[in-house]
Length: 95
Image (cartoon, rainbow, N blue to C red; front, top):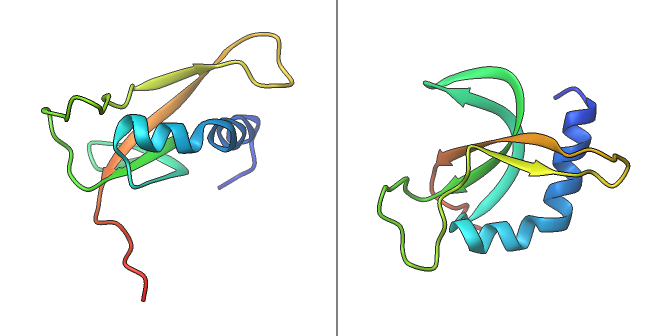
């Protein structure tokens, strides 16, 4: 993925809020990649939440992943909008 300014903001946000986001949204991991819409990759970078199952009914302590996150980067004076995506997959199993 090209190292754009938006990519830099996503990395910064993930570095600051990553652990909190995992627990708040019930994800087993978070990454940065291209947003997918209808199964097709777009050219828009996004914060990707990996979950075991997408479900309309979440436990009481889990919030749905928002379609975007508003964030003010450390080197900016104005907030920016960061895209998000949710991908269903099993967690990695390490030996």
